[in-house]
Image 1 (cartoon, rainbow, N blue to C red):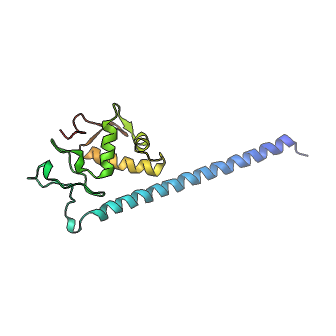
Image 2: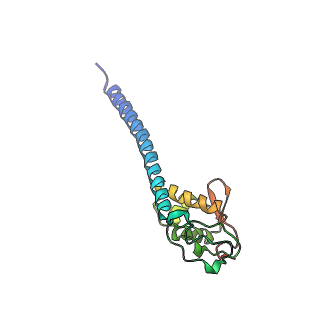
Image 3: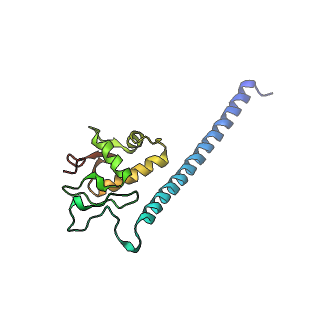
Length: 160
């Protein structure tokens, strides 16, 4: 006859295996969910562009000065940063990212940025922040000196 401790250990082992399997399934489901969130955000950005391949209102022609740029709208293209270009040309979500980093003396990772923006630091929200921060970094608004750590170059917040 098996001992009580032996039966308990067997059930504990079985429960632990089930938890591990469920955790693996959860990780896979979260990864799929994150991809759908990113895809939806990307499609929303693409659909927000004017038809005919024209650039959105936040992108300046070569002869336009920063004062001639129309107010940015959600989904508008992130322009390349240049001297005299103010964050007001950015869509509201991007402006908020720049403002958060302007108010921080240290570089921040995407989880910290999401929390500072008032978002839940769940994978889907963090990935949305990461894609925006990467886009701002690629266009010269932010700096990513260490992978995943973003900061603002001096002078970028005020557009000077």
